[in-house]
Image (cartoon, rainbow, N blue to C red; front, side, top):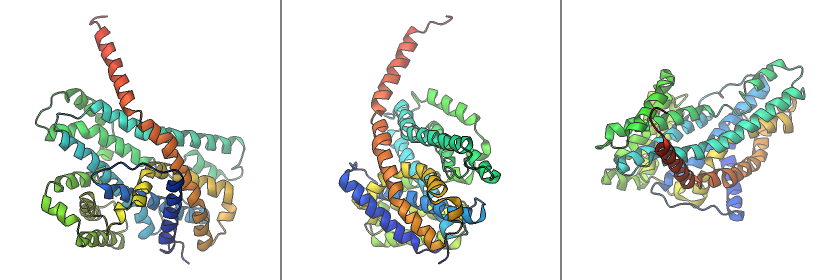
Length: 382
């Protein structure tokens, strides 16, 4: 079997859903009713796809010593297409908030507090764990005699699989939201402080990053929100023809392009996303409770899977042993790791993500009261 054979993907995906079903049975997850439930169902497929993308990279890394994307097209798209659609989901959710509020009801302070509490706790957990691992490797001499591996470790290139790069683009998008609001709202009352914050933040960012193809992916979310204002399209999105079209578009992107990070494949994925965001469930699959439960643990799964892969291949399997594995053996070991990874993500969601997100209103209220007290006690010239 080739290391880029398609066979492991459906088998591991089915195995992952079985594990999630068991976790949900033992520790039931509360699913909030949302308008675009298909998006919730899509997230789990995307995050697990990124995991498989990096699991494939690990095969080639252990056999060649070079960290690079797997040969195109399929396993490369598990990374690039998944990330592109993640950016579109973010764009859809927050462009939707802007258009729904129209300057009347959007609480900007709460929005940024909620984003900080959503993103930073698991990021801090990953950063702390990565530092501990790297320091332990260096201090204990676990990479003695292998300076190339030590250099990789020092850069954290493969300790985390480099997944945190997407968070830069997420934050750029969040801080650009006041600028987008100024373009679409009829009233700008109360927006000016946030506009100033946006301008100051973005002025310090790399212009090439702000105008990159990755940033363009967020526009797919705006397109989906705009298309949702057409009742005839929303009605058609619930047909089997729409589900078939989504599958056809994604298959065309995977078969026809080496990466999703190009204008044409990104546009095709944007059309597919418009359909999903407005009700296309891929023949009902994305609306299943199990898919939506999988979607709940997406962020922890996405952010932590690189570290779990590193610990597994570095300390459990061993790099020398991993370098001798056949593709079948490699993917069997990935299958053995899958329940561990999903359990880590599941309990990270329950014990870190969910409790911190539940503090959003309290933290927003406390921060607003503190700012009010500071403003009341401020005397010019003192």
